[in-house]
Length: 264
Length: 230
Image: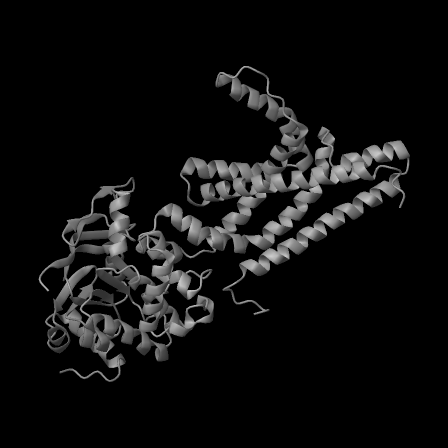
């Protein structure tokens, strides 16, 4: 648990005049499950997207397994990967699960899953298919491997997207509001898969509005407010005895919406 | 219908028309992809060039573009060749001139078709590729292009039909296509109606075959899409 998987140092990000990340340091140790919570616009999704540089920060440093990602400033002042080889290698080691799944609609589920293992990791097609079938079984989609995304429910699509991410055997998986686009009755099946990954000891960073899930699954909860970390700690402390006023106010509204949560 | 022995000539002309249409379309597709990429994601000067290209070409009569290319392209090619140290005169065959003119023209329309198709692909599809460690070229080839094809196919099919018809314009620069051979036959036989009707049927046959082919392609590329036919 002691080794660092992801380390962010002094991350700043602005969109035009709006500074959405105002200097954030965040560390995830290997095997740790970190939940990022906060109101819409608090910067939590942007922060997550900075980890694998889908979003270009304006300042800061990103380390993956202790290796610093080389960044250089572009003409617009944002930091972008300096070395193509390094960033593709790092990205292959960091999975990302999107709010809107982003499955490729012209490929069926199996093709979605084997694409990167074959073309990025260099697996043989046979091996990639064998591993993909195993992963699809694991997320409960063994019978849907030949289906196209448009014919799946949102929950099935998200589970397929998780299988696609797992196929690269990432050391860390980032979840960007993985259940926010789902109908309420489909949330549980996706959270179940993520919970299973957490129990396997994987390193997960999860941006979520599911407070009960965060409390049950995360080792550490980080509350973001207006681009800064306002409060962080074990779920029992953040949910049970929030110290900051803003965190208390946020939880007061969000916990009441989240039925069945009892504060201990 | 009595073709008075001109049947072989019409067949030869038809073959030239088919080759001209296919080669021109292939070039127009490449130009269109380049133009759309420039307009959608290129640096500012390339974007401006793309806009100038589509704006100019779409504002000019096709016939005029063909004449401009035929009389201008040879000079331009030779000027470029001589600056590169190549001194011999390069003659432009009517077929090459026809291909350049049609491709230049229809490349502009294809640019707009592909630009529209590119815009329909959510940024998230590319991001998903990036997040899995795929490089830009692979994302374009494996994720973006296959989706662009199927979005662009119906409009491209219509453009190809127009192009087939516009190949007839190239007969003005002396290419022995179907239209030209028909005119020759009319000149000798003094039976314009017979030969123009024959040409009409041949063009209709070509466009009908093309339409069938496009439908076949559409069926093949819509897998994974929810369509009315399921």
